Length: 380
Figure: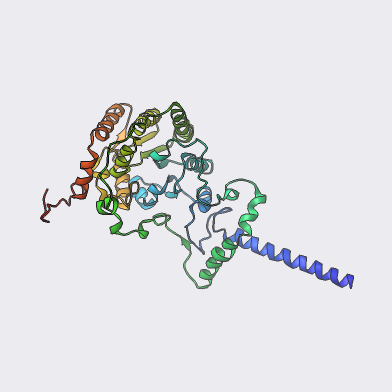
C-alpha cells in the first residue's frame, strides 16, 4: 500500500508540475504585458492596463519618439505625433503619475533605446510639489514585479489567474477564430474620449450650480520646504535626464489647466503659491538647452473656453492635437529671453482677473463664441 500511495503521490507531483509549467509557458509565450518580449504578430493584444503594460512597451517596442505624461496626454495620438514630427512614436501614459514615475519610464526608454530622438511630455502643475521619489499608492496594488529585475517574483505574473485565463484565454480564442493579430493603436490606448460625450464639456457642465467665486480668506506663499521639494523634483525628474542625453529633444509643456482651475486656485488662496512655483520651474528648465519648454496658460482663447474641458484639468482630444501643432510650430515656447515676459503676463492675467465676473461671462458664452442676450438672440 505504501508503495502504491508513493507512486500516486509522485504521479500527482509530476502532473502538478507539468500543469504549472504549461501555465507559465503560456504566459511567457503570449506575454500580454510584454514583460519578456514584443507582441507576436499573429495574436491580438489589447492595451488597457497602463501600469502593467507600459514597462514592457517601453522595453520591447520599436520607436524613436516617446509621448508620455498623465491623463492629460491620454487623449493625444501617436499618429498625430508622427504626422507633425516624423519618426515612430509610442504613447506611454500613467494616469495620475508623479514626476518620478514618468521620468523613471523615460530613463528606461533611454536604457533600451539609446538613440531615442524625441520625448514629448506634459508637466502637471499639481504634481510640482511631490517628493522626488513619490509613487501613487492609492490606485490599487502597484505591479512592482513587472518593473524590477528579480526573476523569482515573476510568479505573480506567470501564475496570475486574470493573466492566464482572461488575457491569454481571449488571445487564444481570437486566434482559433482566425481574428487578425495586432495591438490596440497608440491613438486609442488609454484614450478616455470614448467614455465622455459633448454634454460633459462646457461652462454649463462645469459651472452649473456653482456659487460665484469669492476672495480668498488668506494668501498662501511657498514655504522654504516647498521650494526645496520643488527644486529637487524638477532637477531629479526633469532636467537631470535631459542633461544626460544632449542629443535628444525634449518637448515639454506645462499643463494647460482651464480657467476654472485657476479660479478655484485663486479662491483657495493658492494662486501666489502657483505663480511663485512657475517662476522656479521655468527658470530651472529653460537653462537646459535641449528642453523646449512650452506653456499655454496665457492663451485665454484655449484655457478660458470651457467647451474645451470636461473638468478643471482635462481637455478634449482636439486640444491635444492643437498642442502638438503648436509645439511643431514652436508657438508658446519659453526661452531665457522670453521667460520674464511670460511670467509677468501670467501673473498679471490671473492676479488682476475678476473671477466672479469671469464666471458670469463664461456662463454667458463669451469665451466659447456662444454669447447670447437674455432674449436668446446671438450677440458678440
